[in-house]
Image (tube, rainbow, N blue to C red; front, side):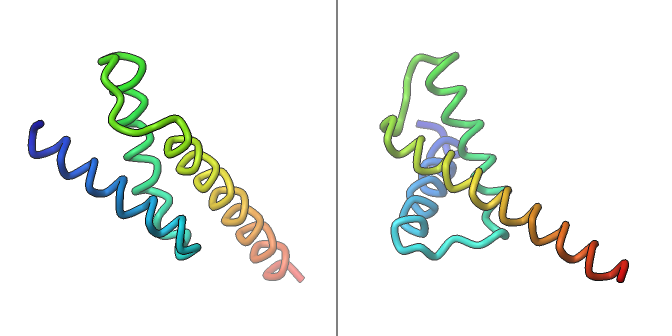
Length: 83
């Protein structure tokens, strides 16, 4: 396993722990996006997944939740500043 792969796998493990502890913030969006792209490649192109389907799903669902919450926050902020 290359250093880059090890780093992304460690980052994945750390993010999954944060999700389990309900300790994920909008600041984690970029990190989750990065590890999802990495794992998509490992699964679909390399045919060598490093995480389970359920772990991938947890990351994906967390990203969707963070993304929608962040967008809602921005819309509320933009609306509030127009009044």
